[in-house]
Image 1 (cartoon, helix red, strand yellow):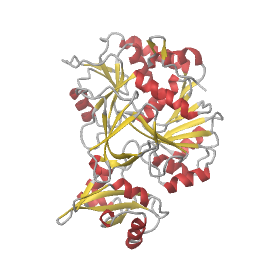
Image 2: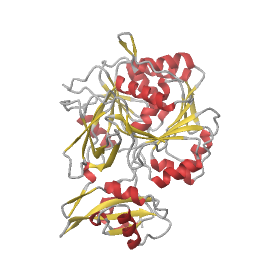
Image 3: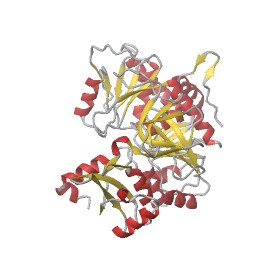
Image 4: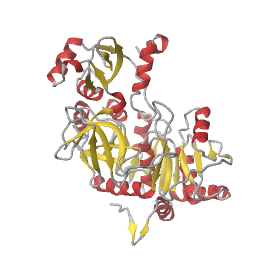
Length: 469
């Protein structure tokens, strides 16, 4: 098992030093394999140092935006930026040029490098004082507005690496994360891999068949970091996972049906569901369904939670404090160690966390709180339902009502759906008033169903809506 050093005496280890250790000792080992392209640790060291000679001319401790479609090119520039004491800002390479420029201006980012490898430098008046231990700056998904820039510090991720090693138990040589690197899950897996001297396997765009061929080129033990939609795809395409020893699934809770189906097909794989966020890193984990099936598992050892503004069912807003949390949002003062996660939640006496969805997703139907995610999880346990999302519709009498949009091979009968949900313990006001079977869903860059996009298309109607039916 690889050990991650957190401290040596009073000296605090930084991510760049962990990566440099591997660059200097692993040399001929493949560091990254993206689709059909790969790079060794030795070549990664040489090429990142070459880039660093071009970046050394710029002032230290300023931000550099990196927007590149090729993850290998991205990581060269990321490492080079750290070598030159610059702060990498991880921009989504698939957003528009207009949106990129908006972020550069809003957050006073003076340097930018794109796919052309050409560096653009703009002198910007910036009075923002950044903490000294910033590793990089990431951006939230921005599903309801402008993405927020958050500051990730070295020690928070190094501490996360330590917990990761504890969960892996056995030795793993290869880490697979086929999602977009601008998403915190894949970025974390990539940096974790390089800090521990393993091989990272990723993709420019998730493709199950290509991934199947790629991972089976290697006979070494493998660990995957994926979101549930990717796990569904692995199941549906009968992917050969004979060398995979563990899978970390994050982003949404797996339905009981999918969990059981996966464990039946791949009983030798440790399926570890974990809940976390870009801001908080790891919060809770559930290994092989050992925690309550309706929870997102037990809290990581250093994690403390508070549930505020509770309703009559003790469901409230989730706040978290731990040694894995971020350093705050750029341009915002950090006034509290407790981070507001943005989810409704409860915590049991056994320290098991249960989520009830995002704060912004909650519906109020006839004065009653309705949590869409709970209804969706129940429906996903039906064989007839492959994917489900609950959206709201304005209503004169009740304020709003719930609409079920679902994908499945056959039509779901409304009466059957109603009786099933009531049998699951849901109240009558939680039963969707309407249901529509769709052939397609819209997804976020990280692979989750895009709730707000689906809602806006439904409300817009017309051609855009008809394309989903």
